[in-house]
Amino acid sequence: MIDYLEIEKYTENNRIEAKKALGGFPKSLWETYSSFANTLGGVILLGVEENADHSLTAVDLPDRDRLCEIFWKTVRNKNRVSAVVLAPKDVKKVDYEGKRIIVITVPRAARCDRPVYIGDNPYTGTYLRNGEGDYLCGQKQVNAMLREARETKGDAKTIKGGLSALDFDCVRDYRLRLASQGESGNLNATDIGFLKRIGAAKEGRDGRLHPTVAALWTFGRRESILRHFPSFCLSYTDEEGTICSADEEHANLYCFYFSVCERMAAYAEGMSVYNALCEALFNSLSNADYAEGGGVEIIKSGESITFKNGGRFRTDPDAAKRGGVSDPRNEATRALFFRLGIGKGSGSGIPAIYSAWRKKGWKTPTFTERFDPDEISLTLTFSGEKTGGGKISGSRSGAVTPMQYPLIVDYLTEHPTTSAGELAAALNLATDSVKHILERMKKNGIVSFDGHNYRLKR
Image (tube, rainbow, N blue to C red; front, side, top):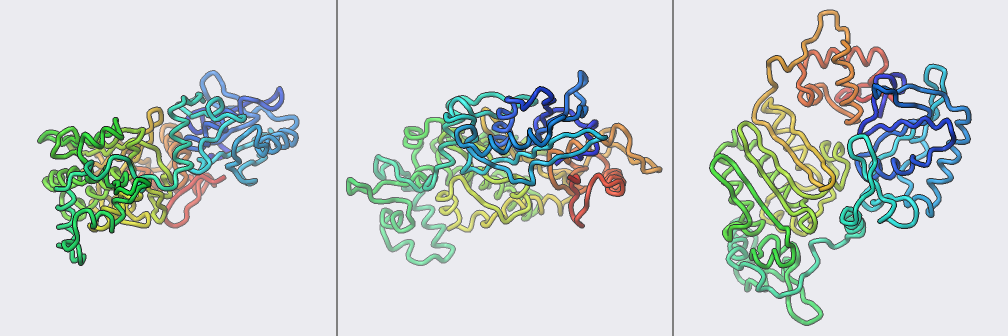
């Protein structure tokens, strides 16, 4: 994740933690292990100290082998640490300028392993990373991680209250859309029989039919949704005004989706862009944490649009961009939309958005993940790279200047793999200059190139 031969170029940040460890094994390491695993992952450097200017310097570990033994013995002790999220290759003994250090690469924990906590109580031992420090999670954050780790049915579960919670005008409109697409039998059964057939209503222990959570979100009446999910909220704003679930007309996902798609069609340049915008909308709606995170907020302003939804990434963000990886938070909700031909499956939705923007030559889409409160945002910009003073021009000699080098190394620290174009767009640098710098870094053995993407050498 970082270039071990260039440690002095780094500073402590959200993904790097340095610990001197000359007085023995640092107990504070476990707080950082927990926070990295529960947040974005990161690198712990033992035998490295932070200077007054926040730069890092190796100090040499006198008993490196012993420290490694203590680490593995402790991390494998279930009474001390709840989960082992790393492999043997993630703990390296590295010699830096003749000084012995240890590099521990902590990956982001899988959903089923979170929260990763210290001791035997998740409420007193779960940490998150924020800026340059670790902080103890509150009860709400821990509950959200525990809920997602054990969730098996999610929005396929039923809720109490009967089918009166649903807006049957929406259900009938949904059935008509299905029928228009050629699905047979949609108009022959009753609305209730139809809901049962597609799994949107199930019989409870009382012998009555009850809607699933997905059906409530998709077809529900506003007051019924808020009764079960008080923080549920959908909002879209552009130059023409706001569409919100607080309005009876747009109270549920079904009505909101089609209303927003209609508004986005007014400024989408071509079908590929329109499809990408609808995919981004569908992605936010089907992955929002309506139980804890509230819902979805979309803001179109000037040349950009941002899709925000409550919750955290359930898969590795970089893997999701490449495609083929999918772990939807609201799988039953996705299935209801899939029936209408809405949304791409098998993890292909996000790559399709990136592809549409790349073909237009526009700035690379940007995903951001926030914690406390948990929120994911996707920003799409309807324009290309800026051509002004914000760019860093390439030099004729090809030398990597002191200003350019740290920017690129820092980005590669946060993003394990990237193309020259993605890097240039993210840092607002000139593409030709970035390509030149990356080639020089490759020649110097700092980065590797697989034909498509660059990564820092380990």
